[in-house]
Length: 116
Image (tube, helix red, strand yellow):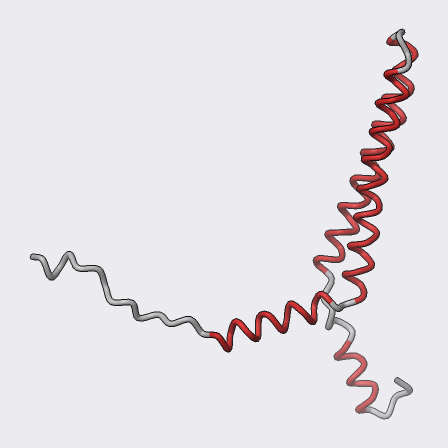
């Protein structure tokens, strides 16, 4: 009975070559210009949204009457929401874009004697 409760022997071994391939593919993906541009645009939009929320907070805090605070909150809140959504959309586009999507077309044109 003691033999049946023994933990199984460790059969799996780490494949360092697969890790190296994964590491190299990640480095190639990070170097893709579309992803770096979209990430930069997304971060700029998110930073602008945070700054807009801060400015809205300060503008509304200077007003004592709630009716005077509402325009600040509405315009700043909607602007920050739009900037956040735009930044998220651009970021997701950059994450989902296939960096090698146009390469087969380029190879076909060069193999056929095209201009590319």
